[in-house]
Image (cartoon, rainbow, N blue to C red; front, top):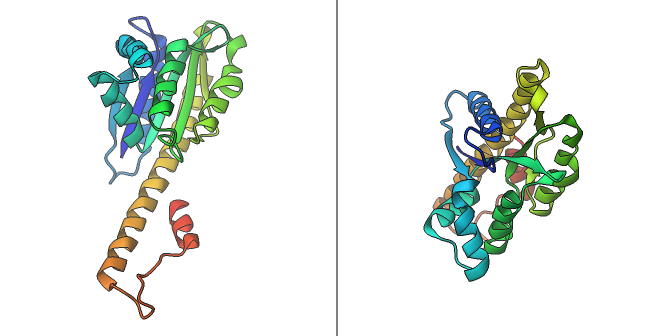
Length: 216
């Protein structure tokens, strides 16, 4: 499975990247033992110039194009942004604006774990008031548990539990959807091998069966 992590942290080191890494590690640990999880981290600060040029020219540079392709091909996403002015950062929003313009269905049905970092717990509502509506608009499947981390949360008791819970939800969705795709491909191969049926058409897998496969 392909897990892509999008981090919009600006500083080095970055608490945003730290949270992203912890979420990615926890998600990979919760995948089935027989499933390999390939993790790619995209640092948006490295793409800031290409994102700006894309708005002006309409064409992504090579690094931005690679990042957009990785997001579109991922089995699941972890997205983490610092909070600026009580919302996600402009760089974070710009990246997903570019993605939406390039392919408005790039995130359709894709599991997404949302997370954010900020200096105070008062900004925790950014998860439900900004991030969740954004990815709902992009047709993604946002996991129930989001993770917000204020400065005082690092080293506190509650953070590991929230990370574990969110990572488990994302891993379960990714595993179920991946299994569903494999089942769909298998059914397609069987239909091709069977050839035309008595009515001259090919075997069709009922939607109910495909939906049951996706739900695991």
